[in-house]
Image (cartoon, rainbow, N blue to C red; front, top):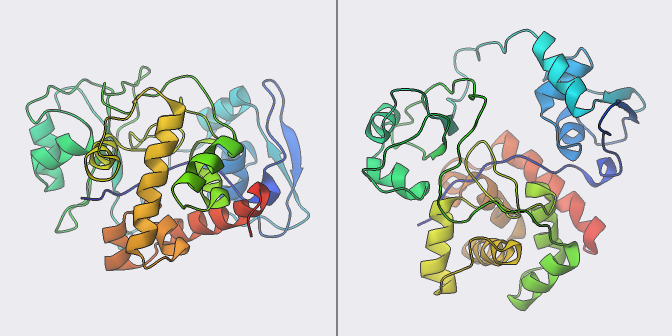
Length: 304
């Protein structure tokens, strides 16, 4: 069993050298190959926040040599507060998939029915029992439906976001590129590729939880964690350990690359998009950007 991925951090190698301080924006000169998305990702911001802080739309093209102001967290929040609501996607746009924040009155069965998938599949993907009560504010990952049924519209997240108590657990702690590479090398995975994925996913931070409920350095979903334990590692992995999070992510990445006939591009694409989706649909635009960023990051970590 394999699972789709999401998320949400990283950036091009050229954009890795800057970050916004706590109290003031930092001017950044756009370099060749950069996009609004890659600059935002490298600064641990959303594209919408960076665009709002610069008076741009999320789809705006940035020109090489122009200046983009990278806001602080408080400036980004203020800019988002002033921004107009996000427009409804035009007809024909791909249906939303992935993250969902539980609203008051929601049940696991109701969410699954709206999505057109089984309760068991939603529960397993998020490390829950099929009869579990879901708490308002919980972030859930929703699987792709067989008929392409759109996901429930995601409401604005409540002030306190709840993370389900399923493995792996987000915990304080970071790893280095060298530690990621050492674990990867022990399993025959390119150290630079594994480090690039880890940086893209979390910036080596094990305390990160994505809006789609992926956790830790390698941004692993609870269902994927359980599958790796039972089918590849064949042992219990420490759900609180940053190193074990890397271990699980490396084992999963290795399996995806092997299943792709040794092609690291399709393996990385499967890590992000889900191998079944890649096989059925090819690389989606978001996935293409993700793969390009990972491959660009390899040179930063000693690979070509």
